[in-house]
Length: 170
Ligand SMILES: CC(C)(COP(=O)(O)OP(=O)(O)OC[C@H]1O[C@@H](n2cnc3c(N)ncnc32)[C@H](O)[C@@H]1OP(=O)(O)O)[C@@H](O)C(=O)NCCC(=O)NCCS
Image (cartoon, rainbow, N blue to C red; front, top):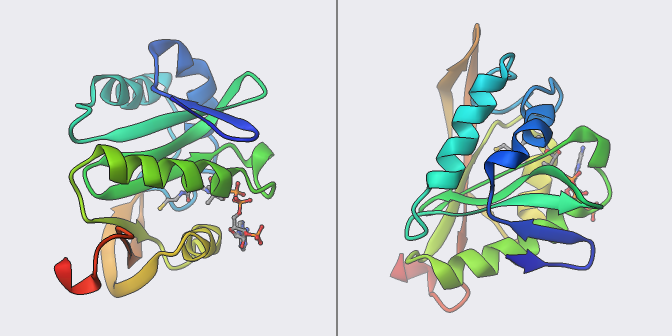
C-alpha cells in the first residue's frame, strides 16, 4: 500500500464493490473507457474479482481511497500498461496526478518492465494532459482501434521509459 499527502492507495477487496460501481456506472467517467458504462453491478464485480485475483508479478494496481472512500483506481493493471479512473465528483483537484506520481515509481520498482504504455482516445484531453504532465510521450496513433457500443474509437499510444533506461534500451 502507498500513502500520499491526501490519498491511501491499496489493493482491491471485494468490499470495494459498491464504491467502485459508482465509478464504473458513471457516464462521464466511462466516456472514453473501452466499454460502455456498467449497467449491472455484476460487471463491476467481475472487474473487481480480476483486480483481487491479479498476479502481483504481472499487475501493480490500486484502489484510490480519499477521505475514507474509494473514489477510483490507478496502476498497472497488466504488465507494462497503465490505467486510471476517478469518480467525476473528485476531478480537477490534482488527485489523479498525486496518485499516479506515487503509483508509477512503485510499479517500476515492483514489476519487470522497462516502460509503461497507455492507449488513450484522442478526444480524452484530461487523460492526455495528465499523462503528458507525468512525462509520457506520444509514440503513435491509429484509427478505429476499438468499438464501444455503436461507436468506433481511435487511439493515441504513449509511453514512459523507466528513468534509469536509455530510450534505445527498449
Ligand atoms: C483522467 C482523470 C483520471 C484525471 O483526473 P483528475 O484528478 O481530474 O486529474 P488531475 O486533477 O490530477 O489533473 C492532472 C492534470 O491533467 C490535466 N487535466 C485534468 N483534467 C483536465 C481536463 N478536463 N481538461 C484538460 N486538462 C485536464 C491538467 O493539466 C492537470 O494538471 P494541472 O492541474 O497542473 O493543470 C479523470 O478525468 C478521469 O477519471 N477520467 C475518466 C477515466 C479515463 O478516461 N481514464 C483513462 C482511460 S485511457
